Image (cartoon, rainbow, N blue to C red; front, side, top):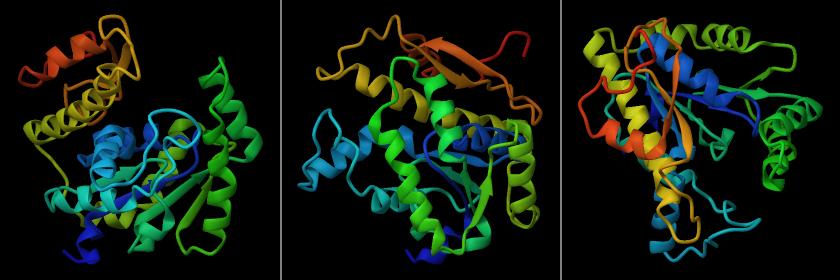
Length: 253
């Protein structure tokens, strides 16, 4: 398949702590898009890389430092042509974008990034999270993609700016409209999250009890205005996605 087949993709990039996932989830649910979160493919991509002979350490500073771009592009090409896809995540780079008008990079200042990450990781910010800022700043200096400085923006203000940047693409692209279509897209995202969160918990190198670890999933009510998140024990989420949607619902939805 040619690169132009990714013209159905809206790209949201940025360093750790920029708000990529939050904005992409809300954008997808509001507009009936498919949410592709590259982090949710981490374990799948690791196995593919290892199968191809790429040395990938289990843990440590280099565990994530291999080129996932070809696998991400393969994932996106394998998706249905409609509805529009919003793709986000740390491994996504400006070089992957074929249509600059359909991409935005969310960029906090270094100070704001550090502040956000310290709140998220009070036990200590992983070093590789901080390494992405310099690399992205260099990439974006020579890239035509739009950059949005998010320091003084709330989540809703950031979402509104991203909607403005993508206004033409959203108006002209195919999106889900029925409750059934929207619900199927939310379930697609929840399935991916279960794969992400249950994957490492079942591996000997990451010994964690799936009956105690809690992760966050999207409410499957499929209301375009719903932004509710549902905290579930991973083992319960695995059982929930084995049932037909909507089996993950916020209280009262």
